[in-house]
Image 1 (cartoon, one colour):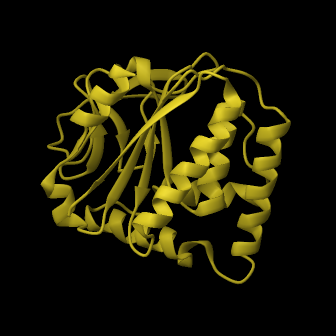
Image 2: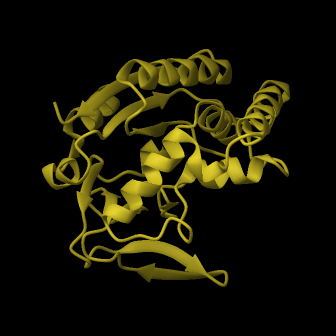
Image 3: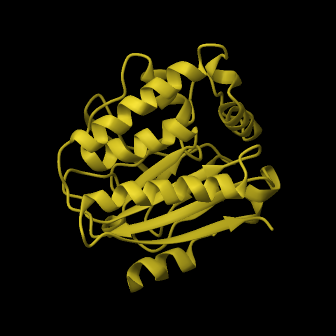
Length: 236
């Protein structure tokens, strides 16, 4: 519990990010006590709901015109990323929903489903693999990012000015919510998670908090010892 509170308490968003998007808010949720397990009936039902919701949403509106996805596309353009080439996480998942969302394990399935259901980018990182607290910054271009290409480990660097999540070791997620690093990625053995829920207008603080509450409600199905701590960070 102290680990989670300390990590959340020291988390930060650099003023340069708020200068870029004053409407940005992030809800951080630290969860421990998760009992790992394969996809199950509960996570399957959530994924089916999410797939149905996504198909209904895009039946009359292009994916890129859905309000929160459109806002994230604008945010990507603001620091030089091309949203048609590097899609924000909720857009990427929504595009997959038509043919079927991935089934990974019950933990990942739950937060992917909540992300698509509410059109909110959600990242999940292994809390025990963090070094220090999460910080959202505009990169100077020298920060290391642990990834892979062609099945081989690869270290990349971001573009100067790119918005990235980092800890005391390296980048944990590039382009705000585009691609997570390998070091802190969730596995089938993960028992403690840092969730990052990103919001821009027109999503309200109340709506963001409600999504977080729903995520926690479903995570409580993953073990009797599940405990969550939250922190909302905003410019105001």
